[in-house]
Image (cartoon, rainbow, N blue to C red; front, side, top):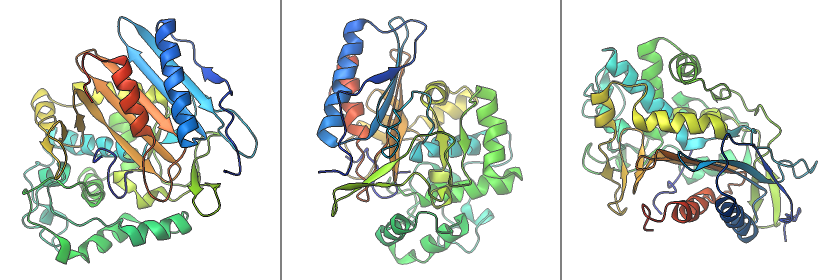
Length: 375
């Protein structure tokens, strides 16, 4: 969950030994040795530059091969090395799941993207003018509930109780900061908490149950789920660096409901490989719905090659999303021209919410796809 500004707007207690080995998963056809060495070198350079506890990277390029590797230390107390199968919080990549659920319900005729928010939240400010599509495309004009004060409190007490209703209430109280709907694209998590609630009310299911039945199971995502509790189903830990002490704070356990439909999903490299390709090729949606989903618009103040569709980030030639939540930052992108996928997770996200996975994605994508990438 990129809880403030998304990554696309563009001595520690434990020293990180980057002579540490990478754990790799055998691929059906590995990438050429020179490409593997190039990826390894880029990852290790960024780990050293940015003081990252651990990194996991997956690259799938049809016709060339596959690559999955994990680097660094999963648990700074025990010294356990990171494994490629470790599950992690995918943060704002969760928005793609929430949007998919909404669009499935639209395909089934249970709602329309032209429906007004007032159908479900009649007392929410501007709800008689905001459509479901406005929420999907970040063009609703609603204020961000997860402001600096909320994030500071979350950082201090990551297990504190919080619900979607709390998020809606906090956002509604900021009505003076709302802007008119469908005038500009401004990334706010409030949109996707509201969409989560719409999914639950229309489908009659909790979000985790709906996604399991309609997204995870159809795609065979065996280790992906919408988290409702604080624990991770792996031995991987996520960290934030305390700038005052220079030590890492363990942020593995937190209440995912502050993120909710905007950032509560947990997944793995391999599952995200399957998922992001399905997301961007429209496996779970009708063709017309998918085409509309991919019709993006530039975000306010962002370059034209970065656009937001209906729960998808269109980043130059790539389709997918990124995200950050305390302890973790991630990237999951599909390159249609090559039918290729890159998935990255970094086990560090500090209080400043500055993603380290985004820089790694930029470097790797340029190195791997020089003909398609020009940043």
